[in-house]
Image (tube, rainbow, N blue to C red; front, side, top):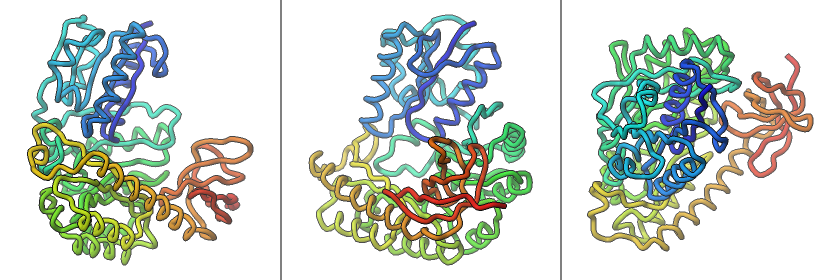
Length: 419
């Protein structure tokens, strides 16, 4: 029996694509082995959002080739540097962000060098088997046309395409039968989802009609999605987790405009207030970039002040990374790398403080926890607000009600309540 292993770098969209491709290999009779084990085919699903991500991808490719595997490179870096990757030792196939549904046939056609293709429509990929996992990512949208000044992804993922809601619902049914207890809807620009049945809010309502065994979580969203009407509708959901990732990037109006982000700091804060007026103490996380070209000390201080004012539950901070082909890479006023990192480290520390403060604010509450692991008499998992919880009496693969009594480094500790 031939063997295949896979490594996913980057976003939840990549996670979904990898799982779907492995499912295709499994259906074709391949054995799936852990990454790092000897295998016939090594699948590396890549990311190109930063230079650091690219370096990690290339390192993984070299390691797989060094183990003697025939390497298949997929994802954004494959789309961006397909010709260069085709010349690397051990790389036999470069698939990119299109053609993944035919990956088994491609691999079995031989070791001819095959370059990435272009995506003209939403490519249907499905997870047929969730394995032992209790949480599953479901991709419902791909592509973006926002063209933020720093972002290479629209050039690699193509224009926005949405998955038909009927296809999403079929996958929901399969995941129910597989024992999954949490679904995460994701996309390159999830808020832009749209099909004949409506937008993302309509899709959520349709999923809720079918999904009666667990809970639903949303991937990253762009500011502007949470109108009063949509907030009111989503707040009525009995399965939607009150945990939302709303990308910020900067707290400076001047820098947001330079980034081609179409909102002001004030509009962003008002949207957070709106979310909090409809949901009970929701966990709101965000992305922030430091050192965007032209960012002055005052701009950074405005960002730091907004972050504290917003009281985020979690903060993801990234130093600006110039991407060839984007507008920002050509802009003047490039901030020195050392200063980008210094500002990032300052915000990362702020993020740790905010995460701990939010976790502490949840002490004494009863949380719904999806348990994923058991060790030393304790079960661990994540609450509906995506706080890490460890509790006695929990069982992996189930959702339990936990009253939390103490916290340790943003992890809540408690006991499962009897039904």
